Amino acid sequence: MIKDRFGSRFGRVKITYISNEIFSETNNIYSVWLARDQISRGMLLLEGDILFEKDFISRLLAQHGEENMAVVDKFQSYMNGTVILPEAGMTQRFVLKADQAVDFNYGNALKTVNIYSLNQSAMENKFLPMLSDYIESGHVNDFYEAVIADLVSEGNLALGIYSAEADLWMEVDTIEDLCQAEDMFSHLYEKDLVLGDGLYKAGKGRVVKKLAGVMGFIGKSFFSGSPR
Image (cartoon, rainbow, N blue to C red; front, side, top):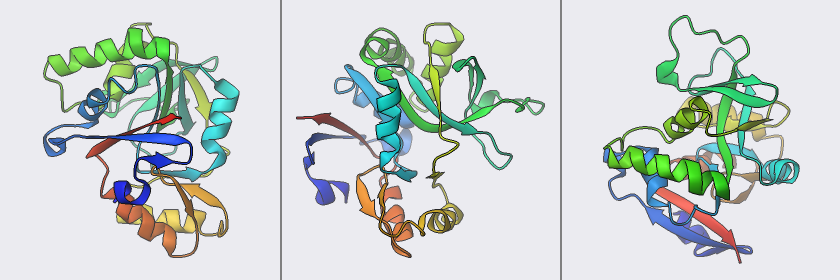
């Protein structure tokens, strides 16, 4: 569907498609590893089930450029998944869901939005070597966040945080999420939204339909884009 919609280019961006043919037997860490040759010069990783406004990424890159960043929001009780414990605008601890004990203190926790920016140095010298170690050790069913967590824990990655608290965004995992996304974004009738696969004109009833199609591709492919 995405290939049919955009082909090999989106505006000035050349698109490379990398398919994970064993996606049903692996996790996203393996999909990222398959794209290792395309992302060695730096990576802006956006998971395909995140809905956000068009200017969101532009603001992130304009403010932080080549810095290593994780996009976060204030943790809410209904949220689950990886969290960051911050200190002075940086990631002090990067805690996967599996490592959050029953008595885990979420007092100052920030929820990851599953958008990360890592520069060339971090990719070549930190992330990709450890990613390869994970794959070669048979950890193909882990989340790629496990690599980030280890790097932060070992003091090998200085990871800044970019707050999305003032922005509209939504992670869509369920039908209920789809309905909530419809309510959240339906007032932006003529604004451009980004659905992970490109720009889309929002309108009542159309956001959910588009998102449902995009979700069908989550986990199967990794998309890499480079300006040309």
